[in-house]
Amino acid sequence: MPKPLTRARAGLLASAVAAALAVTAAEPAAPATAAPTATAAAPKADVRFVAHLDIAGGQRPENIALEPGGSAVVTFAYSRQVARVGRDGQVRVLATLPEPRAGSATPALSSPFLGGVVRAHDGTLYFLYATGSSDLTGLWRLRPGSAPQRIAALPADGLPNGLAFDRAQRHLYIADSVLGTVWRVPAGGGTPTRWATAPELAAAGFLGANGIKVHDDAVWVSNLDKGTVLRVPLTPRGTAGPVQVRATGLKNIDDFAFTGRGDTLLAAVNADNQVALVRPDGSHTVVLTGADGLENPTSLAVRGNTAYIASGAYFTGNDPNLLAARFTPGT
Figure (spheres, rainbow, N blue to C red):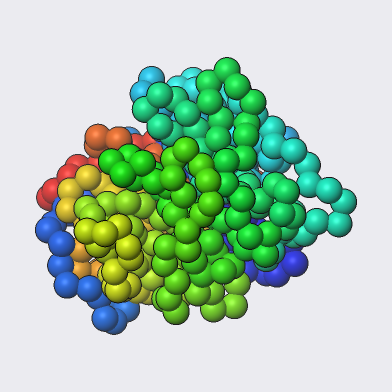
C-alpha cells in the first residue's frame, strides 16, 4: 500500500519476488486470541534481486501476479500502470489506466491508486483501480491483445485494494480498505455483492481490510490498522460465515501469501521493512528485513519453494525492487 499523501501512516503496497526461508508448515490450528511475540529469524539463503525498479519513473509495485514463464505482472500504485517484469528484470508496460477528471481525490490516499492484480489461466488480468470518481473506480480486466476495460463499478468513496480469484467458483473477492468490506464479483463482471462486513474488517484510523486470498474453503483477509489476519469461511451456499481472528500483533501488515502447506503464510509488514512467517497458531517469526533488501514490502506470491516479494519504497524513498528466494517447507 502506498504512502498516503495526506497522512503519515503505513501504506498500500506492492508486488513480486521473494526470499529463502526455513518455513514450518503445520496443520490448521485454533484461532489466535492474543498477540504472540515474534521470535528470532531463522537462517536465510539465496536471497537475490530480480529487478531494481525506476523510482523516478513511478515504478512502485503494489501487487503481483505470477506468470507461467517465470515473469511477474505488477501494478504500479501511483503511475496508473500495469506492467510485466521479466525474469531478466526488464519492465514492459501492458496498460496505462485513464487519468481521473480534475478534482477527483482517492479516499485515504488522494492520488489515483492501482491495487490488487490476479491472472486467469488464459492470461486475462484482473486488477483494481481507485480514483474517488464513480466513472473509473472498480474492477478492471485486461485480455491479451485488448485494451483495459472496467467490468464492475465499485463505490467511489471506497478504496478497493486487495484482490483474490476463486477459480473454482469463478468469482473475484475484493478487500475495500476504507469501507471495511469484502466485495464479490463474477469473473465475467457485473454488479458487486457486499459479501462480508464486520467490525474486524474496519479501519482503525487509516486502512482496514487490505490483502486477501481464497484458501481452503475460506476467504482470508489482513487488516493493516489492527495488525490481524482474518479467516471468513465460505458456507455451502457461498455466503460469508463468522469472521475468525487467526493472527494478531502484525500492525501495518499489507499483503500475504500461503506457503502451500496448511495455513502457514508469509506476511509483508510494510512500514517495518519485514516479512513475517505466520504459523497456523498465530505465532510469527520475522524472516526478512531491510538488511535483505526489503524497502517497504507490499505484496508476496509463492510458487513451489520460491517466495516472491515486491517492495514499493513508499517510506524509504530509495529502491523499489523485486526479490526472489527459496524456502524449505518444513524443518
